[in-house]
Length: 445
Picture 1: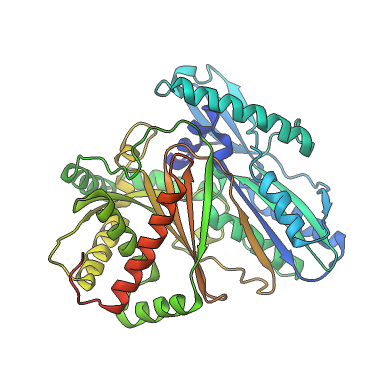
Picture 2: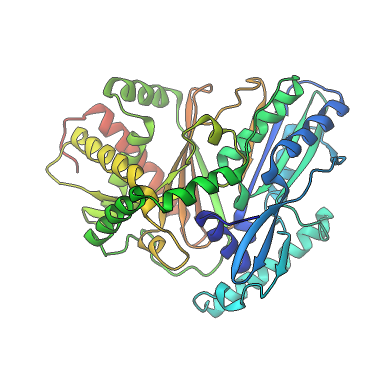
């Protein structure tokens, strides 16, 4: 039994406030051939056996929240039959919005309800949440999921006319986007009879505790606090108060020629695609905000070692990055500054404590970069499904699937952000990508 990590506590807080739908990660992995159902069942059970995080439950005790693991027990996973991949995707687009229930036990004095209170919501928000919950009740009823058992992860096997695979829905409190791809790779490797290495999430938690007692933590904390002091002004691209928790995902797939140009430009200038995209995104922010100093939220996966990359768990940390532009700089100089700011932020990010009532209110946009691949079976297809729920943040994810030769941009946003704003974001970011690569020595606009 061990306490929740900071990022996990943030997720737990959201669930206590009724926003559990926003903490869902759902994906399918499809193998373009038929396999024996027994092999699928065996591999799925092995995934649950080797990953203790998939069997987690929670304990509220003496004003703290802990997590523990249930012993592994073999189970028969449900098998769903679909006539096509399109039919599967249609099912998952709804299934991926149905919240998972956490298994929570109370010991000792438990945790007082005051701990989960936040600012008083508007009457409009309360009304819209009630309407949404009513619709969700009938969705669960239609899908036969009104009385699902508490679980942090659900796995369902899939049968198609000429293919098979699995659907996994996992709670963000024990997983991140990397975790979904990790489970898919483990499942595929086990189907091939390969040995899979997995590690305990508690090892990561223990290492974080040691870090908090180190001199390095104090230096990181001092650096981040100094960065916060430089710009007390909030960075809100869409400052209107949200009236609903409903959200949308808009996806744009870049043309192959543009993606090829990005790969080539980054190689020639010795930068990562993430830095190029972040430069274009922050130039868009500068234009929209009308100022040269602001924050952007960047996402760290915290998975630098082989052990961490093969551990099921919630590793993501949000990093507040202070951007400082100079109108006399060229695009090339801007890239260098964005790169330097990012490197320094990533070096010291653990010193920035993000809580439900503190630093995340400095900004409302996060940028993440995903480049995990299905290494275990390149013929398989992995598809992610959005939960359609968020509080008051926006997330722009760059998906690098180099095997496809294209970048995908996903923009997840509360419905208060209009489609016109979404179009403006994509069009402006893509325009800046072209300007940077075509004329890096021009002065920024």
